[in-house]
Amino acid sequence: MGGTPIIILREGTERTKGKGAQEGNINAAMQIANMVKSSLGPRGMDKMLVDSVGDVVITNDGVTILKKMEVNHPAAKMLIEVAKVQDEECGDGTTTAVVLAGELLKRSLDMVEANVHPTIITSGYRMAAQRALEKLEKLGIDITPDDEEMLREIAHTSMISKIVSSSRTHLANLALKAVKAIAEESNGGYKIDLDDVQVVKKSGSSMEDSELIMGVIIDRGPVHPSMPKKVEKAKIALISCALEIKKTEVDAKITIRDPTQLSAFLMEEERMLREMVEKVKKSGANVIICQKGIDELAQHFLTKAGIYAIRRIKKSDMKKLAKAAGARIVNSLDELGKSDLGYAGLVELRKIADDEMTFITDCKNPLAVSILLRGGTTHVLDEIERSLEDALNVIAVAIEDGKMVSGGGSTFMELSMDLRHYASSVGGREQIAIDAFASALEIVPTVLAQNAGLDRIDILIDMRKAHMDGKKYHGVNVFKGKVVDMLKDKVVEPLRVPKQAINSATDAAVMILRIDDVIASRGAPPSSQPAPGKYDIKGEGSEFDKEWA
Ligand code: ADP
Ligand code: MG
Image 1: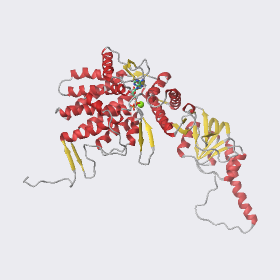
Image 2: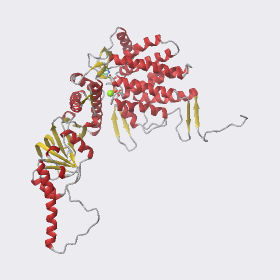
Image 3: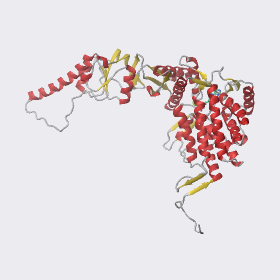
Image 4: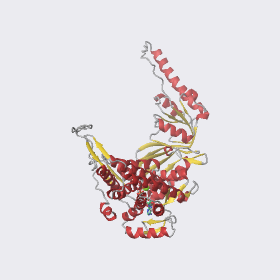
């Protein structure tokens, strides 16, 4: 090899190896978890995020907080990924997943410092996760779409940290009815595509005025002010072509020399448009929704025929309309027949907060529905929307999987207890990691209690005792301030929420732990500290971490 050093990396490349790299990554990821910790649970606090142009977001939603932050550190980004995956898979439990991942990493830091090899830690974590997921399946409680009360409670649990309780009931009801309307039975189970629930926000009025529309809301009124404002028993034609005279492909010039020719020309145009409207009339439609434009003269004829017409509708709205009203979108008026028409009990023009909107409602068995959300200011409305989305998601997930579990940290505590037993049955050093995993799971009830201002040690001791005595649904009810049966208190959530949280938290922790070499080219942020983002939130819970170390 000789004495000359061989340089294979570009000048300025920074390289951290071994323990240094691991600790740097773990610390960065833990900071992310600490940021969202204080927002977990019904007593969690909100965060106000102000971006560079001064836009404000006030939220308690883990994934929203993390998405809004501009984090640069690669390991910190992996934790944000955990939140995103959780959000995609379940639509809820994002804070839980991130806090759990942070805790797994924190526990591993102690082991790394005590010279336990990362391979041992990761294999122990994998074994623990596997066991926890098996146990979790056994803890699952069956639920069907007919268990409406429980489904509503699941929605309640997901929304409780976000909005005042009075409207929670109302929103949970809307969400339940919406999901049940669009749930499709497929080989023994249910398939739910939440894209079929359109959420329309309008600030003003109050949350209680939010409503479910068995159909679609379109953000415009009829093309002509003299058209009817309301059509009952509407027969709806969905047309993707324009009701206009087509322009020729090439630039043509028509020279008219004589006034009679001019009138003949105009008459011909009129005749063509009249014919188009005749075709609509003949089909029996009294509402037409056109993806493209409608000529002024055609508007006039449609008005005379008493037809409610809307033009220039988004393609995605056309598809929703087709699903809601049971109509077929036709792309030429010649094709339009009776069987293509959809049905809605009522098509109506409504003025909401000064905007004209068409409500296509009372559809028969609609496969797409809409929720009109109302509420004070836009900031409030945005948070209501996030809550509603959580509610829609948890109901959908619970129906799809047909399983739920008890909340308030009870499930995590039960899993933790089981893992401790399991750890003692596993020989070798992995036992230490499994034990650490078991302790990490206790972070959920611990933080829930802490955020509620309860004594977390008392709560944890009570909870451990309850679970030791076989009370597997006992968790901390933060409103009562004590450990109780969460199933009786109806704090329930879909099984998929803790399942996904454990899965993605373990994956992220293992992935971060396996890195022992960080090679960053110039310009990349240093590995030990996250680069300052646009938002500067101090990592909370650090005091708390010290105490629990
Ligand atoms: P996430 O982003 O993880 O969904 P949330 O802030 O929505 O975080 O909090 C969810 C947690 O709050 C769940 O663990 C749930 O069981 C818990 N929770 C809900 N209601 C109660 C309650 N009354 N007492 C204690 N914990 C509760
Ligand atoms: Mg939640």
